[in-house]
Length: 295
Image 1 (cartoon, one colour):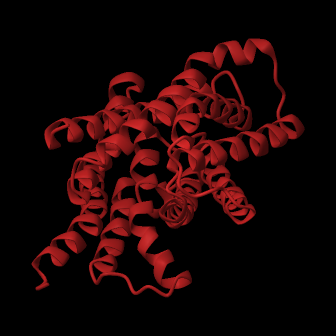
Image 2 (cartoon, rainbow, N blue to C red):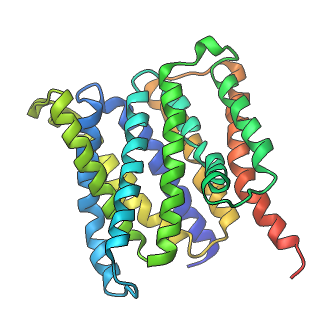
């Protein structure tokens, strides 16, 4: 596979994820957020399982009790991120959600320095300032315009950062990203279905009404897009992968405007640009710095 083909796969994955924001929003017209999360990740688990069996044939490291404990922790982080994002979409726009969620790119290095004692690259601090300014401008430049949903989505980005950090460490140790994926999907599905059964009503009409969104997000956003990401990242550079995967926010906002008719204030476009730039520089600048340093 050529680098161009790999980057196109990553672009397709980002487009699928961008469409997932629209599906998550429209699904709640028929079904509650926790039922949607539970059914979505149940479908995602089933979609990834065939790839897990193929991966297990080539596995060099056996899954231990310690790995299972880490898988559980990662699943709980994913559940936290999925829950805050889904509930946040009830009071924020798809555009805001897609861009604010991307702040996980900035949060990951912060978590590394706070909990792993790994000093981040200097670019993280100006990037964090750019991201905060971007959120402010995305709201129209008025703090009163920020919603509870926006705040929940910031928390969501924090959960994603925890999930990504733990997953990165675990995959390096086990070499089994698909097994990790299926495990975290299953944990999230179980947690969400338990909460949904307690706090939300459900009916077959509601499930049928949200079925297209559940299947899209479960099969494509979680299953297909994840596999495309794993394949694509093997044949391209980290900096180029960051550029193409970060376009998820652009696809999300574009599809929200096209399908849902969402709009943002003129100053909000500057906020989007600031947040998108912050996401990119956090990934690209450290990579370029490493390349220019003498061996």
